[in-house]
Length: 135
Picture 1 (cartoon, rainbow, N blue to C red):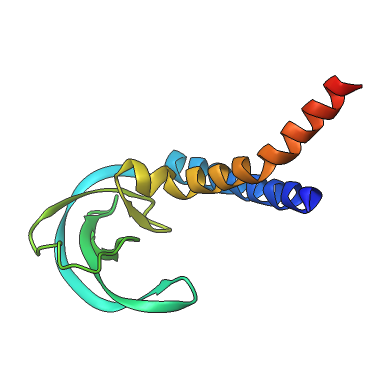
Picture 2 (spheres, rainbow, N blue to C red; picture 1 turned 90 degrees about the horizontal axis):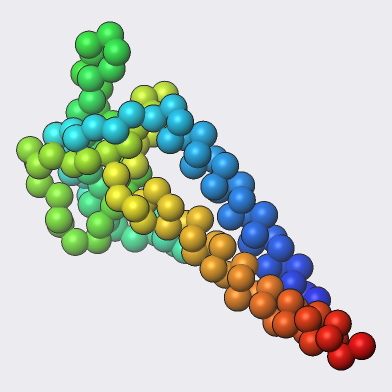
């Protein structure tokens, strides 16, 4: 059981590392902006095994050629907290997607994966340290 937890912890650690590298590559290409919300859609968004109805902001961005584009932000709220005309700080890679410019939006998934990994790896590490000092 201890070994299974350690292996699962390593899987979560590898996943956290993958997410970290992916986010760094995204942020390297991305631009930071404050964009106006032009629409708020009420749609089904994935949540665990199913989906929930939530509000998703749509912002307007101007690309390098001066063309205005509407882009859905990769965030949502189950409560109606977004208003049309409100400025929303975002981090966007025009070719890929936009995320809200908050600490948790950028790093939250990575931190949660790393925390789960640490929790799963701790018993194995403590066991190894105790058996090493006992011998």
